[in-house]
Each structure stands twice: as structure tokens, then as C-alpha cells.
Length: 356
Image 1 (cartoon, rainbow, N blue to C red):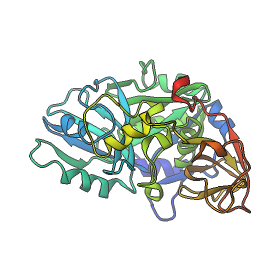
Image 2 (cartoon, rainbow, N blue to C red):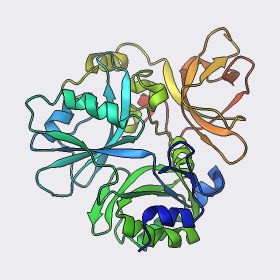
Image 3 (cartoon, rainbow, N blue to C red):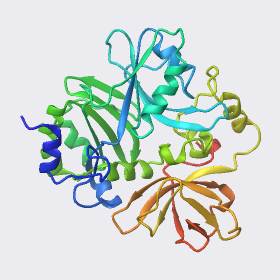
């Protein structure tokens, strides 16, 4: 049987110049209109940490911003991992094994920051009966597909009969694991983790029904869903509220302590939040996470930073930008005061937590 890499190559995958295993796209970046109609994307830039053992959930519960101990086996959640100063080192998607013993919790995050973060987490295991390992590429997670847009649900149902009914629901079976994420473009968005054989069998047919993309398409969809991803360029730049993590259910303010908890709680309850992350477009396809943005009302200093960026298929890039709320109605430029202007778009959720 043809292996996963051969399948990707046969469909025209363009691999990353520095990372031979990562697929950027299949000949060209997809645009938001194509994503809204329906797409399937090969997700190759995210890794998985497996936390195994009877104390795995309780250990992670004391490290992450969200509740792990009470996580059901039919759901997934977002969380952050912070420094003692409350700054995000990573944003994570996590879920439990469907029933294997010992209990396993899986954490998904960018491959570029996975090894050092896994090492750092392991330092704090101490006497807990838990062990962390790299599960990237292991069965049943050898291949990861992301799907979304109007046509995606019916296309995926040909391979997975029962799909999660609501965002952050999860189903497991012989097909692997399917997690429904935050909707985008008014339609469900799914993450399908499966074997290389299943993915190689399904992808050609899916590509015949849906627009085919790689990491660029999946990142663009996440940006339009308003879901941030901390990367190597933005580690320790934001407290969770700056990237709207609590608006997405990624922070539990009732759980026990975790690194940075006091600062995260103080940011929530003492005074009004003055910084948020917004959705924008810029006429610069080279825009990257970590780039600064400047308000022309005060051009001498940056008013914010790009959290995530992806080519938008129109010669520019779509962005999630963390910035001062006061600057949202101003003329904001990318990279420098003389850089291209940002065009702000509506987020899929309110930026004011009180309006949810």
C-alpha cells in the first residue's frame, strides 16, 4: 500500500523548505472563500504529547489553565501553559484516551515548541505516577486531517458515520478520533486523527469533493475561527486574556493553582481588560507571528503584535493581532508606522466577555 508521504506527493503537496515532513499547500494557498465552501487540509506542523499513568490527569490539572481532572472521554478542551508570571508558553488542545489503561491525556501543540515544552513539563512530574512522551506520528494519530466549510460535514460522514454534535465534542472508533473544534464560516470544523492507511485511502476522495490544502489552509481557518496558537515567535508574550483564551473556554477560574494562576486571575478581576486579539487582513503575504503593529495615533511605539498569520490566497495575509483595545478604531500599520494598513474584520465572537 502507498505510504502517507507518497499519497501527499501524488496529490501535488508542496513540502516546507526546511521541514521535509510538513506540507504547506498543494500548489497554491487557499482563500477564505474556498475554505467557506468546504476544504480538507493535511495538518503536519502539530505534534502530540502523551501523558500516561494514573496521575497524568491530576498532574496536568496542576499545570494548565483549564480543568483536566473532570475532562470527559467524549470531549476535548483548550488550555494554556503559563510561566509563573502568567505568560503563555503554549496553547494546547487536549483530550483523553477512549478507554485504554493506564489513562492517557493527549496534548496537541506546534511541533516547533513541543520538545522544550515536553522537557519542561517533565521536570515537574516529580513523584507523580505519570510519564510524558512524544506521540507524534504514532498510531492511531499517524495522519491528521482538518476539515471545515459548508461541504465538509457530508464529505466526512462518508468515512465517519457519527460526528460530534457540538464544538469540542469527540468521537472515537475504528476510524480513529474526530474532534469538532470551534466553527468557522458558519459551519463545523473537524480534526480527524487516524492511521496513515486510513488517511491515504480517504484523502483522494475527499480532495475530489473539497478544496485541498495543507498547513496554510488549516492555519487560515483557525485564524477566522478566532482561535490563537502560541508559536516559537510569541512564547511568553501574552497572558491568556490577551489572546481571548478565556472567551474560548480555555481558562477555568474555579480550578486550583497552576503556574501564573494568580496573575491570570488578577488580570480577569481587577479592572477592565485593555488588550485583546482581533481579526485583520494586511496586503503583505510575508506577515508573520511576532511582527509588531503600530497605531498612527501614536506611531512611536507598537500597539500590538501579530499572534498568527497565514497567506490568504489574495496576495496578502489574514492575521490574529493582539493589541490595545483603544487602537481598534484607529489607523494601524503592520511592521512599522509606514507599513501597510490593517483592515479589521468581525470576530466570530464578542471581545467583551460580559457580552457572551
